[in-house]
Image (tube, helix red, strand yellow):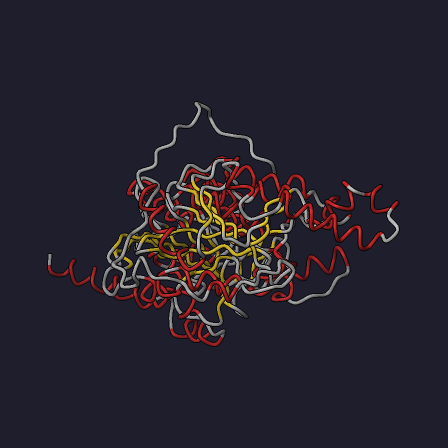
Length: 514
């Protein structure tokens, strides 16, 4: 037996060494880490357990029979992040360019099935050149199996895709099906058709990064949730995100001890937010003041900046925050903001994360482009997401909440459990000036001094229908609170709602707007 053990040790040594120094040097020359270096950064030290390290392909032809490296270009297994089990698969670009073949796909399928059965998060470290052309249609079928498993696991376990190299063609659809996508600038790209095909078909010339780099997907397409300058920072942030998520949809997110007092008064909030509804301010500073130790993780930070979606903690408990950002487009809702917030609300609901909505919204963005682009359909996505959510939901109106945007942003009428408002709130169908122009058009036109009459009627409308306590008097706001008490009020309300249970009607699934 000793000789067999020694043989096994030699094989394992070759597996860990990888395909050779030349391939490793080429990987390093591109500014990329090796597959095992990446896994070591992602998981707790010494916690990785590899699955099928000795797997090799069985394809023949096109020179494949002479090249049968161990792992077949993908390393799979499980380990821990901060002591909690996480499953991972990671492409090894040094072997067949990380391209997917039959054996490669089978390893990924197995680890995905294990993650779903164990009820633990799945992280993919993507650095592959797509389907292995030499294996033909069996490679394509391998992708189908991945997509089907991504869909089965959706809303059951957190799925995180980390793009650390190229991802082209149908391979890009697996990350798109997952909950979060991370990218690294300069070294990772995602596109359906590459620059050469684009040029051949359309005549457009563009680089790989210009077509599908991290900044493009973080700012323009919205495909990427997080973009970083280097792999080390990227993987550290993946660990942080995992610390804010539950292992599966049957558990709640992990709570942590909190030294930030639950009853801490936020005295600066009254100064951060101007009473004048036309003056901008940074909603991010409001969030920092409210949450534990001012720390939060913003999702899609650079896309649809007129709305903020973030994960944070209140008294050690994880919450999802959706907030209008008055610094960008006055905080209006448009197509991209609606899509961004809708997906975030659905993610929070799937993984039992309570939702706090901070409103300061003047309405939906008007314009031909928005209407022709389907603002009705896209806005309905956010409305559907909120109405369908059964987690604790609290909304807080800081200043204005006008028109349909007020209803869509988790108003009490669509199911918010509790609604609070600051004394500066204005809840109305539209702003006073616009309302006066519609309601009192004839009186203004017939007045000797139309401008003076308009100002008088605007003041009258505000006094009658837009004063801060109008909604509270009619039961549409549960309480009007001192801004300084915001943190304590939210924490107390969330503690009460922690045992919330909501019954859903019997159905296979809904049919949300697309």
